[in-house]
Length: 281
Length: 281
Image (tube, rainbow over all chains, first blue to last red; front, side, top):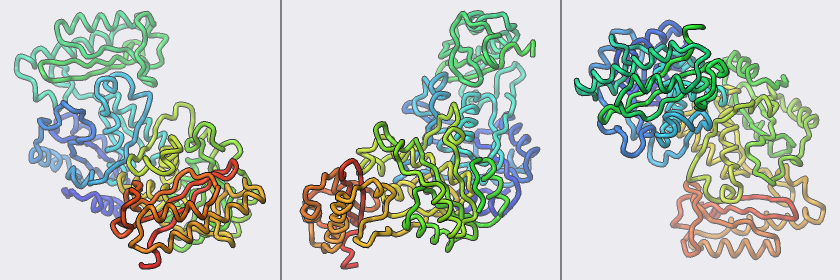
């Protein structure tokens, strides 16, 4: 596995390969969720590139940029074992040099859910992803469904800008108790970690609601199971619009209804999501 | 010459060529200025693609989108004569389908000059150019120096987003009296056209100022020659920042000083520009 910092060098090498490239963009602190994305990448393209970059552009003031977990050496070992061809790990000062002034913005899909509480977050995500796609000559890019809004925003950007690549969705990978894998799970104390297992309980419960339930049933069902966990948002949206539906709306009236959750346990913000009336589809 | 409307088809064909592609993006109503860009494109790449698209995104409310000159059949003949390989002429409804919601924004360089008076203009330009680059698989794109701010904004976007293509600058092509070629020159009545020749007179005059002149000398010199032509702006900026310099600044203190002009003759807005202390370099 080659490990490279220079965007120009990676661009040169990946273009010279002349073979389909699948990219897995990450912020490092890799876990089994990321590794499942690498396996998916391997299954769709001859060459697999992973990027590790804790992207300052997608952290708002006061968020956890400085303390975001960095486990570079362990990450490298994991990626080597997976047979990754190239690891791209740029320096922020080279990836965003002095005078950097271009942003990519997707409106609509970024207004709700995490976009409402994390100012500028998705603009940071779309900008860095567009750069990563260009640098790595990717024909595929694999994104996990854990960050479902991010996935939809990227899909929209790719379509709108005619980017010549396919976005591949990777299913959520969960711990034994069902908690979605996340680099931020490391922040949890043992007590907080036990509390966090209420999140997958809520996800499992709402997943089983039938098409005759209304949005309020889903939200209240989730809230009951979350108990005294501090809620940022609980919403049911169409997968296509990500606009929160009103409490009285029947799930059967929503195109691909999807449940979204963001909570805070101690200082740690966690998100999860699930398609709804999964039972009947 | 193939003429195609479908972005997907153009993407497929240009990728299959497997040869360097040079793109000349235009809004049609082609004149000798455009044709000189096609010649430059031909000199740098094996395949030449021209796009004709009157991009609604770059026209502000109240601008001349509806009446912008459209001379498609004549344009096609000119491009055929020049041996262009492919003409991409998308429909707005297909290039910006329902739900389209992504914009590319370059800050800083777009704040001044035409950016100050044409709200959203450059966001429309960068967004459409990024799309055109992706659709045509361009490794080169040729832009005329007549729209110098546009050229600089595109150069900045390409650098910031690591786009794998080179921007090539095409010199301004001028009429016999020195008026810069522009599709909008067609709007001028014979009387207005005669008046417009004061613009190249002003450009020629300021070009000859030496490094010991200050910005005020340049601006006042230009204003004198423009007479009663209505001025939108007259500015001296560094080519690198496009920030207007104050009246007392010596040209020798400005990195690549450049003069920019926008005027209105009747209903027609015209722009021009020139590097300064050209005499001494």
